[in-house]
Amino acid sequence: MPNEYSKANRRYWDGLVPVHFDSNFYDVASFKAGESTLRPTELKEIGDVSGRSLLHLMCHFGLDTLSWARLGARVTGADFSGPAINAARRLAEDCDIEALFIESDTYDLSSRLDDQFDIVFTSYGVLFWLPDVVRWANIVAKFLRPGGLFYIVEFHPIQGIFEQRNEDSELVVSRPYFTPDEPLRIEEDGSYAGRDTQLEHRLTYSWPHPLGEVVTALIDAGLRIEFLHEFPFTVEEFFPSCVASSEESFRLAKHDGSVPLLYSIKATKPL
Ligand SMILES: C[S@@+](CC[C@H](N)C(=O)[O-])C[C@H]1O[C@@H](n2cnc3c(N)ncnc32)[C@H](O)[C@@H]1O
Image (cartoon, rainbow, N blue to C red):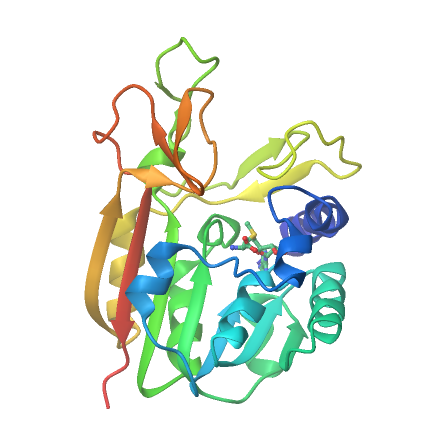
């Protein structure tokens, strides 16, 4: 990824780590008390991980990685943010959980890590930060052992095209579905875990990826798609009129059930 984009994005994510760490959204205190941060979707769709090696790509500060470890997986987490990896290592130590965390851009991970894993996992808000899904899919395939399983649960690219100005307004198309030639350049405060946060580094570059591009990239990387699921609920209040449908999921107040908000893909690397 061009340096300018990667640098801006890393500065943004580095700045978000302390904010997220102290946020209600991530609720580190409950995690420390033994709670899992994994959601019903990935828990059900991945199944038993005990005794299996698991690589978590773009792991942020490691709550999900460490939650998989509590379920018996031997975990490695990777993220390009130094503060995120430091926070993840501290959390692992505080909670006495065995885990390896690696600070690396996803595209450089092959030069830092040589293992192959039973499971490669990544979730909620990752592909948008990567310019090239073909390269990404090849990296996923490289880190899987033959017979290993890849799983992603991600915000649906259809949801990403909409904006809603306020609770009473309609959803309007405001971003492209297809990957544009130039990245989206977004400069704004706040994040999903703290809408009011003032950020020192607010500039980011991102790339929407259509679902067909993601699936095709995984197939071309040699993986066998087991399923592609689409869901009418999500895990963040993306739109002002989102309504909580359970403790951890949100649905559209209007058009509920008509717009896909999340998708998941399970794929295997043939033996
Ligand atoms: C939205 S967060 C993932 C959230 C995660 N599912 C969670 O809730 O903890 C995206 C993560 O991707 C990382 N990231 C963004 N671009 C990256 C890149 N090129 N290589 C590695 N990590 C990257 C960021 O540092 C951030 O931790």
